[in-house]
Length: 260
Length: 305
Image 1: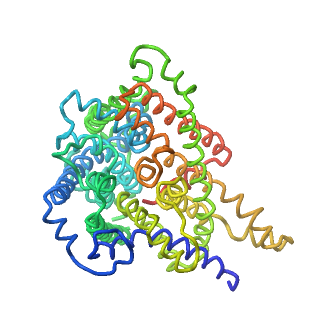
Image 2: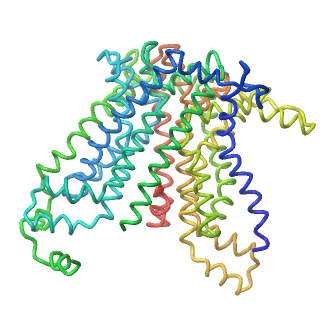
Image 3: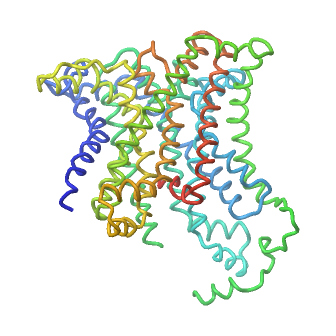
């Protein structure tokens, strides 16, 4: 035990390297200066003001939120049904189907982005909300499949058989027995789908137009052109938002362990 | 309650299709097709079709033939990009392994509370937006940034890191650390510590016991982590685009340039095939290696999201 302290020092440095960089943006968002110099010499809220008063920043935030909400609903429905179908019924080629549905997670996003761009140009979907929603949903389906499938593996299917024996139909069994039991997995999947869409940059860069961009795209463009601390304000808002989501997720997962 | 359940479990199946005698081939179940169908159709239309039709341009743009691959293997910038991408992916993998190993080791030997804190710390960047983290690295690495003012106050010369390959390495390693640490610690937790004690009783020094017993037993985790980090780092676009130098492009960025600036769809598609093939070959190689370790690798690669 006494010889473990050098290890703790090394790990402490690594942990700081993992966490600290992100926290730099929080104080920076309150700077009074126009530059990204750190630490700030004077403090102000002007960059938050700018964020909420500049139409483009606020619009991109609202676009991202709306999109992530729609994507998380669509991907959760499609992904949950597919995971359920694959786990409960014998299907020819179940392994191949599973691989197909997980593929969007594995293919590099640039390849997917370029392909989608070419297709959506033909379909006139570039720069439209529907285009964003379709592409993000395809990307988010695997992130729903994984937690839902693992929830279904631990779920005791005897319960379903019991419900059927007691006279419930297939739909009623799914709705009132299976779904409540796998709810934590479904909720986790919905959360991952939300974050996948809310965070997505590469595909969104291809699909965006000057009239429709998401918050990450706006951040990317502003980082490439005019960097100002509004970016830090946007980043801080995202950090607060995702922290709140994690808190919800952790509460859900602690409830899950109590049920078990 | 459990009695009833037990009886139901043992009762001969009534009208449950799962218990129907297996007639050799698997049946098509209309209900499951209805459940799986929408997701499959969606992924086929909005994922497989666009990706496949883009990739096929390598053979069809601007005309039928293999001219795009001839370009890929003769153009010196294209070769540079391929080599640089492999080197950066290899470097990221090596750095995350060297830094992630002690981290995962400490996670596996410390008490439950310390482990929870270490897990949370490694998961935090996992949950923080990629754009936010990349922006944070700009703030830190820029010439008058946090790192350089820190170095200067210590009396050290400043380092020029933003828009260089070392800058990309620093940013990418931080982003990909969780993918190395999580499978490593998952494997290490399954290692029976008595084996190390046994080795020491039989005369091995602690160092020898670590290198000859613990490290070999953790190989499945090492394999899963390096595989994941290597494949993910091949496809990184945002971090190199912002932290890297435009003169030292990586493959995904070169692909973007070929298409959006040079309108060379065929060249871009050839690069995409090179990217997918490299990832595929690495995956196949590691699958072959992992057969040696049997099922343990699948335990290790199961990320606890």
